[in-house]
Length: 278
Image (cartoon, rainbow, N blue to C red; front, side, top):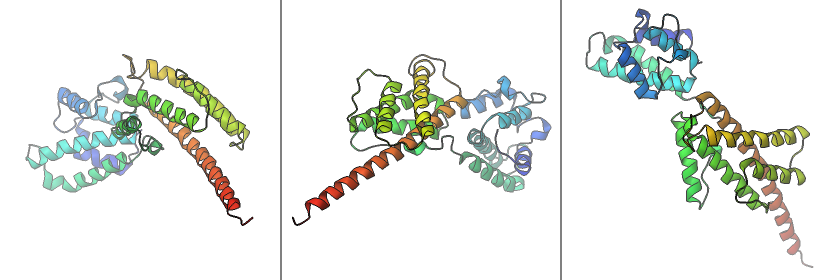
């Protein structure tokens, strides 16, 4: 549900003339086409049915069903439409009369779009000297910026495989080329547990449970993503998967940082001993 308070709802409804049951000068067909062209959503989907099912109620239903970012996207598109009509002095649109409301609605749209759908998306990042990996990371982030997580599930899966494989290679963990994501992650977890990089039993259990989560990710990649000719997974579950995966990578980064710091400390101490005059 979009986070709109009473004042924000009032301003949006007033600018778009929603108390009439209409939304500006849209007909049913143009309303449906405009929204689909703008954000690839069918506003006449049953989940947006609200009240009488009028255009205004459909838009209210959209606000009730969709998160902040997606609502901000549609609101921005509708505001562009209103502005184009208003500066052209179309009948019923008056820029001078409503410009203050329009400005406030722009602020509302911007606030809504500032909400990140994936909290730790910055962990999907480029690395030095690996063009394929960098293109993959860039492509995934672009899909999230467009609020299309469902379109990037297959690439996220590929990214995680490459990421975990690289970690295993860094630590000399033997893996086979055809091993699944959950299998290589299981070997990585076994390595960090054996080397006492985990302090609590709960964290160890969470990581081991994550092996089963990644096993399920294999199924999503194969059967609910663009990896093949599939019916794509819905938006909400795609966001959940992205957040789960990126949060796991964020934690792994802290483990890797600890390992690196220990190695650097040991190396520094070894150098100091070599410098002693005896």
